[in-house]
Length: 187
Image (cartoon, rainbow, N blue to C red; front, top):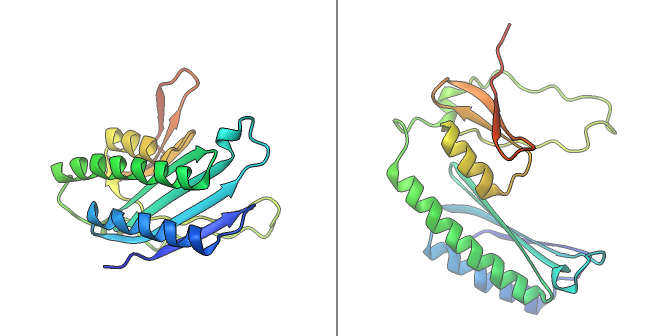
């Protein structure tokens, strides 16, 4: 099965050699996880990095049915950054597969649980909202949300559908390293 790989570069040019190298490395991920829908590879050259070893950045994002996995690695060479990111992604996939094998709930998809009639309104003030993002909410408990937040590399907060309370919750990291949970009430 051929993976749908999108390669995006910032502050650098994607040569044929880099394109072939990324495609070859990413195609190996299909052996670890077979239900990958899309792979996005972001390559960046950060001129302002303090260390020369942190200037080349490779970020890999996998999208599949019900999950998103992301890794980012930095190195002084773009090929080394790609290799490190792919290795890190392989470890993350193995961790994810172990958690997924244990199972969760009755297998009801999030689309069956969430009312799709409530859509967000777009604000007319373009400078205030710089980016719109949509994602699928998957039912999970608080511990799974913490694990998913850490796997995605989210630093501040994580939005999820709480399977225990049947509500959308926001998990956030507090300054002291603990976590907080926001449970909105409709009033």
